[in-house]
Image (tube, rainbow, N blue to C red; front, side, top):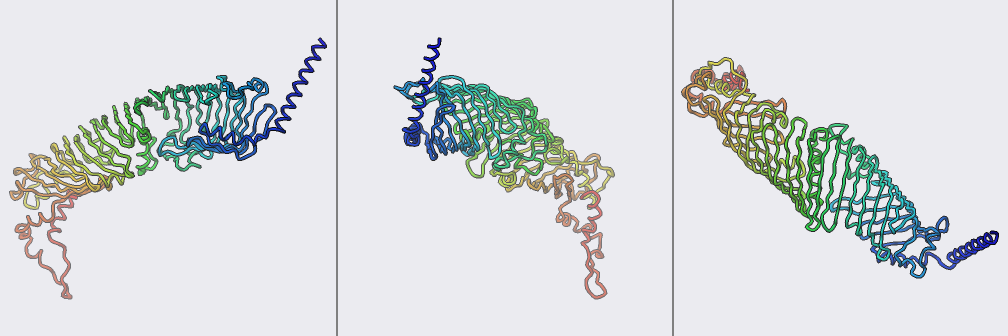
Length: 626
């Protein structure tokens, strides 16, 4: 036994002497800095631009390896960066397993470790018109690295967007061809990563140099508003919107499973939970024809909390729907999206049974179908949006059927004066980047019908009878009902220069027929309408007033103006010029010359007098015709 122990001691001592001699030989005979040109050339052959600007030195404990300082790299325009210190090492036991005859050209690489200290990595744009992402203070460590399929741990930390903490841990297995350095398969299990307050867990695997991949990833419920605020502090291009509810986007979670094949079909199924509201997103990509299909479904979504805190910020409200266009704007091939939503809640109303079908090609979107139940009626539309110009252009063909104005106008225009069922057909086109630009550029035309229309602000029959009283008509009704109930209204309209021009608007109430035309200024929500009224018979209606023969079967125009703003005033009065002509020879004669005689003051100057006609009309008009 003693001889055996002595033999083992001699063997160990001999081995240590050999190692010490080998280390001494490496230290004296081989300077790793002399290998820089060969290392940089070898990296270039694999598409990696490598600059070893700092010192290269040997490391012997606890493992043998090389320490490289100030390493700069760039890989085929995808990523670039700088690493202050890079350590590559292998265990001593693995070192003895290397076939010295064939060296590293064999299919065996020794298990080792990689340590990155204080690195900076810039990842190029992932898609056109997006922005690059920079990782700073990158620190990473890989222990027992292997490309033979053995599992090994990896951990990393960095700062992204110049202040957001990124942490990552996972167990990885890599199978690679050491001759071609092509990764044949990589498996990532027990993935735990965090970006700010968002934590992502899951697993995935990829094969054939990432040509195929499958896996599942999901997040915790995180505060997206806070995450955006943190990013925007040092990355202004990302802005945190001020929404009407402080709780909006404070509980967001997602879960996604994917199966991709870069040469065939890929599918991604995602469930997105936004503050307790669940949307399902199913995507399919046919890479052979560069075609993307996406279907978004949900039971309901309340968008009220996500509108701008300042109601005048229409640009932010429009941006809420931008995610619908992102896949089409970024996808370089053909694309299609279907949206099916049971109910969409807005601040003052809701839309039900929403269906949208969009097609995209580059930055041109075509709306093949938009259907929804809204305000007890239906809306249908088709259209086209071209986002290639600096000022996007659009064309829209729409139809509305039986829209209840009693519920619609208070919700969208702060007005409750008009009721009835609206139906219309319209063709509209325009351009712009904001609501104001779009309104100013609108062009189009259409036809409309309002069944059972009622205008609450004015009683048209009372208005006519008060005007007719000037000509000797009898006002037999001393108590007029509020507003006017009209018969079905029909007409057409045009859009131009921010104005909605009405023409050929025809309706009636009692024995009064009304033909009107007018203008609605869309931005200011002001209107002016000229209504030609005509009484057919001797009375305006069975309970109305009698009409002087001079007004029977003759048009009497009224000019109405006002605002759709809440609390806006409305004014309707007869055309002054026509009234003046009709009164000549009758009322003027009754007034006598005294009304027209201009008094003279004591100093010989003519006394300033008001128009007798206006004085006569004032008392009547002030009563009901304001």
